[in-house]
Length: 427
Ligand SMILES: *Cc1c(COP(=O)(O)O)cnc(C)c1O
Image 1: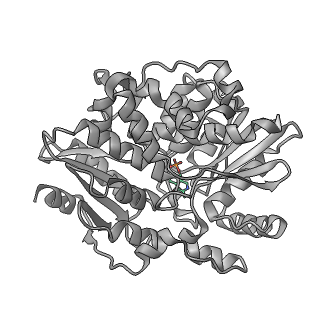
Image 2: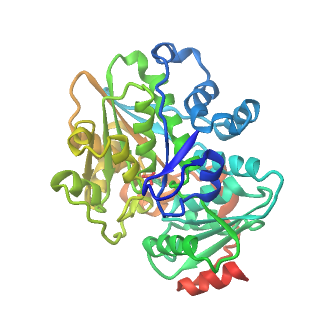
């Protein structure tokens, strides 16, 4: 499969190169040249396929022959070796729990898939690759875990000091080995800007790639979730509406891709916190990136969502067509906490702040009786312990995956300017 840059000023490239480069030379993000829908019979009989078979069918055309079939199947098997259950919340609402992976965030799938692809492409270890990634919370832990001990790959993670939860911080600062955490005096956008600047800096001698959702190998496997949910919900015989708690809009963009492949989804809701750049754009047609604001759903504190341009591409930049299929609503922290409380009271379900924003998205959309709404639970509530335990009358049991990191010592290097990052990378 060939990929083109959405800035259209770089040559088309292979899946391999798109994964290694992350971002094209013209700073555009990559997009597949062709999207071929899957046969209708596949969706009609999806319950007969294992998750591994479904995932392989969904992603194969985007990898093409660049990874041999047996190896791709093995990568998928290791990537999705946990559950993706849809849990009933109300009669016509369920939550798709994406937090059963090793770091209890949905980003585990993308991180693990990308790490394995990169390891495969760099199997002759021609030169060491450095994965440089900015995190607003969960990316760091998932990438650290997914890339731990990957051969020929070093990982450098930038995170905003004091703006990720304690558990998130531990997940990205305690693994050591080929993983280094840089604690940035600033907000997520500062981290992301530094990463983008480093990619353009010709004075940096290392081969850099990104593990943010701009990387096609992190973005595309997120399609799997929507297929897995459909497999579970098909017997309801209702039209599906997905509400996706969104920050960089990679996850929801993967959902739209799944729909392009023929997966029957009626409507998408991008539910955000007060970082409402897209909601505002859908309302008034002006796309104005803003500095990100801190919220209790901090993994979505993004003022300029990098994947939104991919969604626009999927709709041929037709705003009217986009709005028919895709809505976005933004919610305050106060509304989010209220939703956490009402979900708990009505359904005894403990939602984390991101999931609660997703739930609110379904409310704002207004489901009719022929529709079934799914909101994505993108992180386990334990990852937002402070907020959850001060909002709900619950004490959350610490899962095994988290116990492993909670007593480990944090190791991070503090930086406050791009120059310091550059010195670190060139050292
Ligand atoms: C990353 C993240 C999101 C946002 O996902 P995007 O693909 O960036 O839109 C939502 N919730 C949690 C818990 C996350 O970690």
